[in-house]
Length: 182
Length: 253
Image (tube, rainbow over all chains, first blue to last red):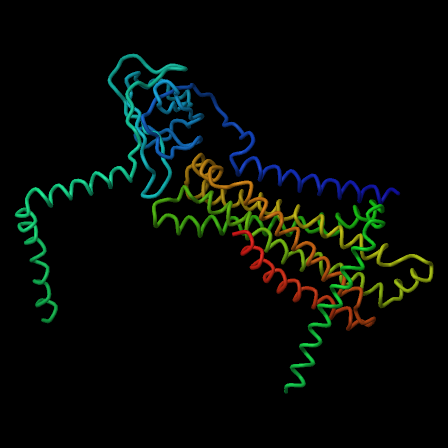
């Protein structure tokens, strides 16, 4: 019985480990369940944005390109219809001016969004539970393209002569050809 | 030549029929075998617990390679933060069920086949029958069930370790932002993806265990026959797993 029971303990430990791995996969890789918190001391700051694009909870908050905190919660303000983004900033950086500007930028060409802080000139600093009042929304690519298309259409109808002058710019292109033949 | 083709076709169909009948026989005897919990626990440990080291090591290296390759590719598009998503979906849905099944066939399947085959060769199975002990219920079914239980758990462990391997390379070495790595993954991975991995590995578990116990049980009772049964277990399992993987992926799309 002694050998059998140690085997049973081994089997039990293995099954437990397997289910722990499964629990890890369902809670930590999906947005179900509780996520493990980050360590260190932080202070909370909120900011209201007109549009946050696809900013996600956990996205970095950076200042001059340096990671200073994380987005902890995103909610909708049902009175103003704005996105309320809660952030935690590392207590190491406790001298951020209170008139700091928060904007939403994109990481790389197709990457996710992050919050970028640009320091203001105030003598007072952001404290726990303060709100950043100067914000700039995410650049939504579709809107941008829409504006661009609208611009092009306007140009096309306004002055057909301007397109003729711009047509001369590709002219220098054929010149390298003779050099190649030499 | 046509006769040869016909013979091999008949042989393949006969093998498929044999293994199906064997499965029906196992299922018919299953309720009573389930009562012998201690035997199943022992086999869960033999096929699962003892495969743990190879599964964890492979998972770590697969994850690390995924981290390197994924980072290199995603960097070209300037979206290396999507590495977490790519690694998690690749591992959970595809890599961990398949690689775990292949490793399982090599580590546990061969052990099952040679063990049962050797019991057959040394007349232990006949001796059991003489003592009115059903070898299917006493020897084959606990091993079959143990393999089925172990496989999804091994695949889950493989995914978890692989994810940490990818995180180790991506975040620790290559400097992908840790928050983006996890948050983009959490935003993109659905419970459906994990479900797909679970169903796949459960079906691979049934297939690999069935092939192993079938090859062992019907092995020629010679040293050569046991060796052949072991080889055939690995070869058949690998082909069947990859074929089933295609079908299942198609079904889940």
